[in-house]
Length: 314
Image (cartoon, rainbow, N blue to C red; front, side, top):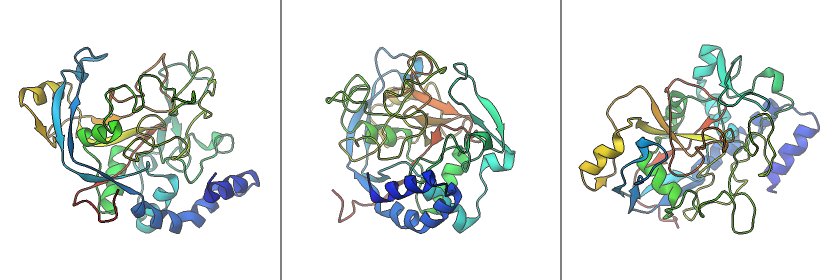
């Protein structure tokens, strides 16, 4: 376990408040976020499927992606704390006065409107002790608007849906970057999602009930951690169920940016709340979507950056 994570977890067990720990780690997070970029090399891939589980995943079409840089990990709680401390930014949930959350024991597909829930307490004040929020957990309860504001403040942007999928696949054509099942070659789980017949109880096969640290599972071939699972990842694109069909008609799509407008934004990768009996969205094919002002306890993001390949890149 990295020393930073070890000290944080010791502090929480000792009764130190998460807020104090986050403040102490703000400078670290600010310095670390820029150094955690990975280079995604240019290339082509096939997006979509002939026999999809949902119509919006068809038809398959070729996409060309120019090289770009991407956060190796999801933006963390500590990263976001540093951003808020520097800018005074108030998130959508903080302005609304509530967030949408879910916890073990709820019915499948249910969401609760939690007064006072925000990125600081995504599961609400009542769960602040039994669901401790750690600095290296991905930040959640951030809307698309909040994610876009963070990336812009870093001189970056949200990845397009095509960029996200190309980076997450890292050359794979299977449901997961390593194969067709959630299990890795060594028999362990490769991602954080909900195990169990329903949300009444999480069997904890992957070791986590809710969020997992952003480097808890091995990265894909490009060095991208959490390409699937843990939290849904906002992308830049507006959602259109016909987007793939329109792209296929146009031939090879060159760095597509999606529709010019819409009412929902695309989120990809699935989350800790996804299970075999609910959204089943954890993987490389499923196209999630939500209102850009919707704050959920299982939505997060990472940022991208244009530009030439860095001299120190892999």
